[in-house]
Length: 109
Image (tube, rainbow, N blue to C red; front, side, top):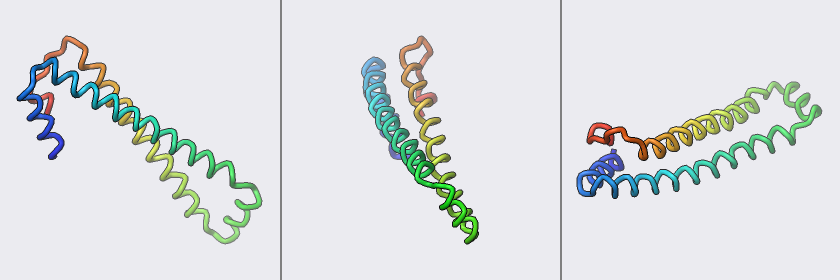
């Protein structure tokens, strides 16, 4: 909420071109960070799934601990999907800055 109020204050105190420039730079910077985080999550999921052999899976199933392994894999999967969705959303916001759509206080908020 605080960040939204700061962005709304920047919108009120800057010209529309300056606001689009500031928000565009912030969106691209955050998107680059999200892309790195998405790579980290996919890499972690690949390492986890690549290091588990059939022998380890049999031991996990014998001790009935497969729920723990599934929870870890789903955590990586869910976080990756969330970061990917946010990345697409931020890039679409960035592209929408350079359209002819009107920008109002309600849209900024």
